[in-house]
Image 1 (cartoon, rainbow, N blue to C red):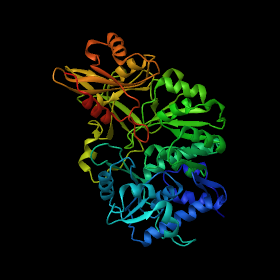
Image 2: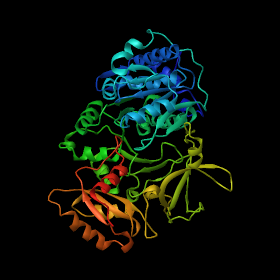
Image 3: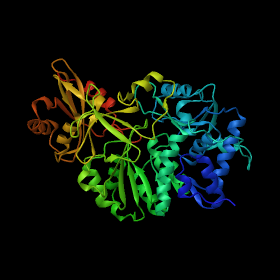
Image 4: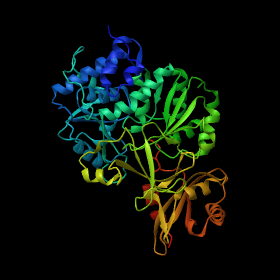
Length: 518
């Protein structure tokens, strides 16, 4: 007789993700597993459809280790194809919907896929001639008829730990995004331990994944809840009021949101009238999360608030349980179990606590590498000269305080070198945000004949705000001479990706359009 997976099962060094799903389906076939904007699937229906899609993938030529590309808004059909690709011995390769047509074609080619599963809206946008040479299945129209007959099971050997599980394409705004490869071992280590901890606590797992399924951010609220035998809701597009309605009706206990989503929820008229009392775990990652916003979330939303600092590439996982460390909200927490972090100077030598430098990390959840880019994979690694261990360069400037908490100073690529001095945009942004007229602030470096680079700021303003020049004059009076902002522009909205990341490349283009300082 099949027994339901236990916390001990998920605490094993390695296991098969899809085998765990099959056990849940056998022991609770009628419980709801997935929900989207259009309906729900029970556990029995979920695993039956995964198997049928996987079997048809194999019949249509999918080879072991070959990618399956997926493109469109998050939905139950999208989730089924993602899981079926893994079940079939293939590799789930969701594509970024915000990428250009040229980038999408390049990603599909880079992945080595034989199939592209695409929703009707995206196909209409790209045109019928897109993805020539790939078997194309329309997710929301053809999937049901395309899959194998009911009861069909794929004949696939269990996965090996080092085999690829998925490829997540980075959200680059120029060039072809890099394909970040995660192994079965990495995904098991990442999510089985999380699911195990929920089962040990007796938590009723009712998750809400409100960021796109092509994003690594979403997997915390999609892959982990299913391993725990829980329920996951996915939505095609985030809307604050719709989110609140679903969370109230579902009695959501676990969610993953990015900072801009938390802000939009708190700003939603009638927010305090929704019953969110079931919430027990709120996660946040993907973008800078200000101390002020963390405090507001703690004050107005129930349950624990856990910030996760990491990269899709892996390298380190820092955790801040904000409700337990209210005096550390300006940090991203401390390295979690199995993670290590170092701070290096420009010569790659370790620096003492309190001093800023380049962050490098290593953990049990590191990428296998960038697909088809061995040189770039090597460039992002730091080799410890003493031990030969491989660490991941995180691309951030930060420091570690005396209690081991990590404070981010800024992205290394965003650091401004003006007249030979290093300027960190985060310091200038904090000065702008201290002004009551400023709602959001971003600072970039632009070319300057006089200084090499110079800071330019962008802000969104409150109603009846002072003019940008007046705000700039006050802020610059309080900054050091080498930090002063050359220009300040007011804009209606900050440009952001689908998962809330600020797009500074677009701000640089806007600064050039508006006219650069001398």
